[in-house]
Amino acid sequence: MNVKLEQLKVLTTHYNLSVTELIKIALERNEGKLASSDALQVLTGKYTGRSPKDKFIVNEPSVRSQIDWGPVNQPITESQFDQLYKKAMEYMTQKELFIFDGYAGADDKHQLPIRIVNEYAWHNLFVHQLFIRPMREQLLTHKAEFTVFVLPGLKADPAVDGTRSETFICLSFEKRLILIGGTEYAGEMKKSIFSVLNYLLPFEGVFPMHCSANVGDMDDVALFFGLSGTGKTTLSADPSRRLIGDDEHGWSDEGVFNFEGGCYAKCVNLSKEKEPQIWNAIRFGSVLENIILDSETGAADYDNISITENTRAAYPIDMIPNALIPGKAGHPRVIIFLTADAFGVLPPISRLSKDQAMYHFLSGYTSKLAGTERGVTEPEATFSACFGAPFLPLHPTVYAKMLGQKIDEHQVRVYLVNTGWTGGPYGVGKRINLLHTRAMVSAALDGSIEHANFTVDPVFGLHCPDFIEGVPGEVLQPRNTWQDKEAYDAAALELSNRFVQNYKKFSSKTED
Image 1 (cartoon, rainbow, N blue to C red):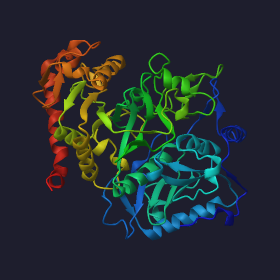
Image 2: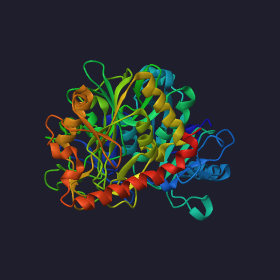
Image 3: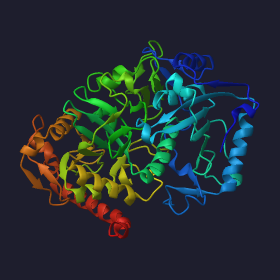
Image 4: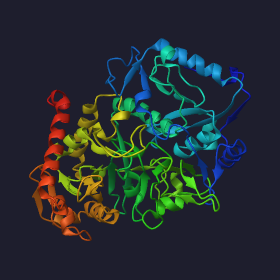
């Protein structure tokens, strides 16, 4: 659909403003305030996480047979979408709008030109920093293939509009439009574009992935899969390696490329000592989302979770000193699946065969961490296919088969890393030491882990190393960290049974 904003009777339309201009306007409109670091601090009000139950895809003829309809991909009719679109057009009259024209995808062979229309200046700053910013000459020929309207002040009427609540995230593939309303949470914008790419790219032979990626001095690319809060951003921001991207990538016949031009890092308990690259990236131009500032100094209090545990910082990737720009590299040598196990029974690191990799990819076991979605107040054990089920329009087995093909083709080593609990479940044990996790990841990346002896976990069938430099031996065997061994055995058996029950829904598809 060709959306001509010039035909709307808006107060002002700002096109592709600079960072400085957007911050100035946001401050003038009281949308946020500057922290002592000069980052812009904003609050998202009622919603401090994504609203997956309020996301819909229009049930259109061209995509009807392709979409994996269900709780994740809920249908909405074309007439319902048209009605919301009409409401959006009417709502924008007499509004001041901010337009960002840019791209999703660092590989120009698979790049998606996008336009994002915002009601808030700070939202426009967010997308300016998160997506790929075009050069001035590129703007002259830029033509959006998808347009996103983000109108927090526009609220749906469920009885009339067919939505679940006042919030809506509606995607039309035929009209090439996304409508977002009733929520100020900025993450909805980036994840909506991710959902679009997850649908389009497999038809181009590109494997879309919810993962971070970095590359070493020997051009050794590594991928880190995992849901929000499992450590993708933290573990991929490694001073000894170049960051390709922190969240969303494609894997083509030529290698890996970043979908974005920025990072969206969780900030709960952020410290300069443990995460110096993220800490130093939070400066002028960055957006601090739902982070409390000290009333006197203006310093960010990253330990304060009185609003939400899902505190965030958004910044352009070039604020990471060793970021790879543009975000393109070769084929991965190592893949790491990150899971935050709330049961506290999975090994902190284990080696996977290809079949195990596909199994754990489809399972996507982790714990939803508090605040990442509405209503989640403490970790909840969950299975999210491909470590990103909320963003997958196609059936998960489509992506799993692509993963298996890539592993075979490029002889990739795959590891499962638990960044969750040890010594007991959530509430009894504690989170695995980040320094230990970093040591395990480093051993996987440089291959030294393969010098260890591996034993097979009797419950999960995972191959666990007996030694990693810098990691206490008992940490590598989770049963040894529990005081009550019988309680461990019961918890491990319960989680194993959950894996089995969850996987049944994929059995018929994986046997095809």
